[in-house]
Amino acid sequence: TGEVSEAQMFVAAQGFSSYTYACAVASQELANWIGAHIRAFEFFGGVNEILVPDNVRVGVPHACRYEPDLNPTYNDMTAYYGCAVIPARVRKARDKAQVENAVLQAERWILAPLRHRVFHSIAEANLAIAERITWLNDRKMKVLGKSRRELFLSHDLPALKPLPEKRYELATWKKAKVSIDYHIEVEHHYYSVPHRLIGERVEARLTSSTVEIFQKGRRVASHKRGFQRGGYTTADEHRPASHRAHLAWPPSRIISWAEQTGPATARLVQGIMNSKPHPEMGYRACLGIIRLSGKFGQDRMEAACARALQAGAFSYRSVKSILHAGLDRVSDDRDPDRSAPVHGNVRGPAYYN
Image (cartoon, rainbow, N blue to C red; front, side, top):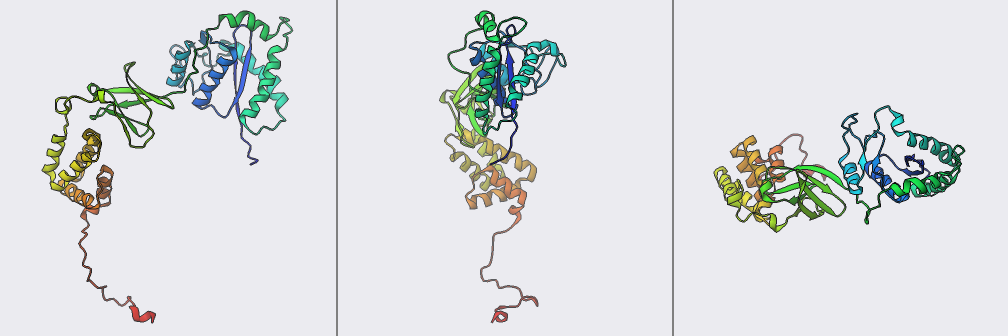
């Protein structure tokens, strides 16, 4: 299209040999940051015991000299590969002197020779960068009389830890609270956890195919990832044997409350639970209606539920919309025989003849 997009360069270097890896990425987003690390490990053919990154926000959200805060996904990735992360101190370039020099060499021997070339994709640019990286690592250093590759093969490579059999799968972490229906909401989808965790805070680890749920560092549930908006993924073993024995809000209690408001509210609540594969999946909507009743009053709630029943809208969103728009106060009774009012500005059909 002719549109020019800027890319950024990720650079990694080994501590002894300065054996260098570099690649272009579209941005410093988390997926690019993690992906560049994975490709660097595979380029080196092993994993270092310790990584010393800069305090880039995507990897180290809160820099601290004594206890830096790592991004959960970054921390998960390094734990998978079995390496530790010790970020450089802020404004202390000597903590990562080798890679600072590698950046200088990349600017001098990669960016400068390629600055006049036009690339039509990141992949195309990385092919050219790979050629320059090979040249740089094979180039003999004047002081030592050996190339970076020779020093890497003799010293760094034997000290690296082996790569795992499978490549790390990018995962993101979300925090959630277990609702009374023993489900958590993650990316607009609901996943079950053991019912004993109702009210507890948990963490969900999302990959492209699975969702793992952890409570205080211990995995309590694992599901195939669902992408249906508003859908439910429920494991039978997570359901209690008797909801009355384990839940504070069984269906009978919710329906009993609704009957105190009025028959229309009771029918709507019953209809919401009947529309779900399991009654407890409708608890969220019913609890939302309970809160709306406290805000708008029982009379308006009963009128809104009656209007929702008439429209066949068995959902919390419909009732909320009716109340906020004031449609519960509008009567639907209309006289089909009622004629238009007589007014001087009403021209009548004779005008158009």
